[in-house]
Image (cartoon, rainbow, N blue to C red; front, top):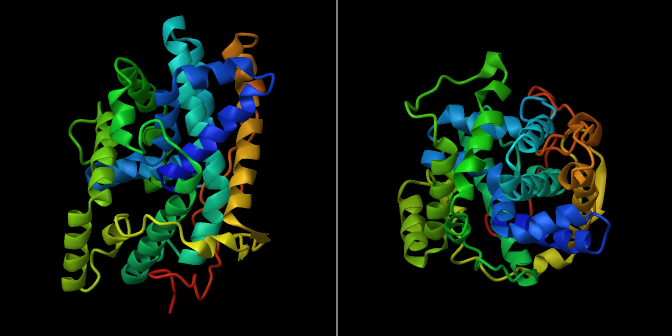
Length: 344
């Protein structure tokens, strides 16, 4: 994460930037295949929504492509790019748009996630109670951020993931094939790999996007949010993680985000002071630079994926390269002065 609005806003602004640059092939792919690009911008997170995260082996794939286990997170991007180069000409435009969407997700997470992790606590805390609290705060902060940035974007799909999926037609199966071939359990280190619990592995990516779309609709529903709030109270906070995702009562942008925030990278403790709007600008800047790397591949001027995409992908959680799971992390002791985000 952050959630879909932040990712789509980064994607939209990068597309505008490319239109004013020499990266004409990339810009054309993004504009022509907008639905595929929008899907790519949320693809990293789709496995988390599949069966509400109950398929741990599939959720691990999301963790792996986010760099949870210290991987080069651009490796699956490179292998997908290589596959696209060998795809029929008629498919390439949509597949490139999808992959660029995934790159925009990468750029947004690398910039925003250190802030989210720092202020919400240890997402992987060994204490189950503390872990649940941290994950609820994590998701809630992302809801606040989406509510803030919603004022800056007019989405063609009215913000609905289902509208994206319904507009893809025959492109969708090819996209999920690309994901199944390159973003699978092979990218999860064997020593931590969870055993498969799903007997049908062939269409998990496809189902995960539909699960994501359905859950988005539920989380925006006022009746569902009200019931969730009551159930969470009755269960003494056992449903905090899901209650945090209910956006129906948090749609107005909070003016708290007008101010500059000071936070530290949880790994190297580097100090960052910025407004969230300035962080968005930084993500757009980084994303635009990454998009231009794809231009020779998309335009057909080069087929050398290794040369074009030679960077080492960073952890999408910590914004640094090769962050191992055991690396010590540092978090805020107080959180943020917003409802649900204070740490006591």
